[in-house]
Image (cartoon, rainbow, N blue to C red; front, side):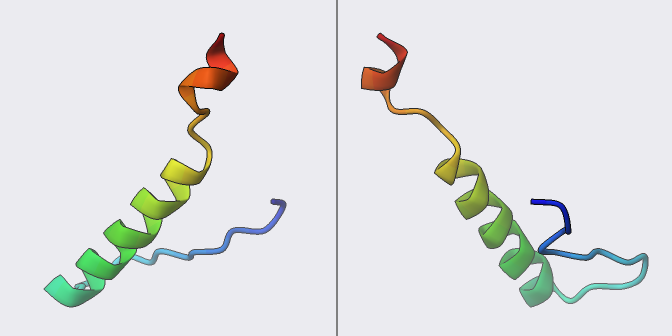
Length: 40
């Protein structure tokens, strides 16, 4: 990925917006975790 999928700017965010961004970041991080079988 050369361009960011998410852009974050300074400012006030509503709790729902923070929850949505958190869910997206967690989901994206899980995509890149290797399975235990790949580590053997």
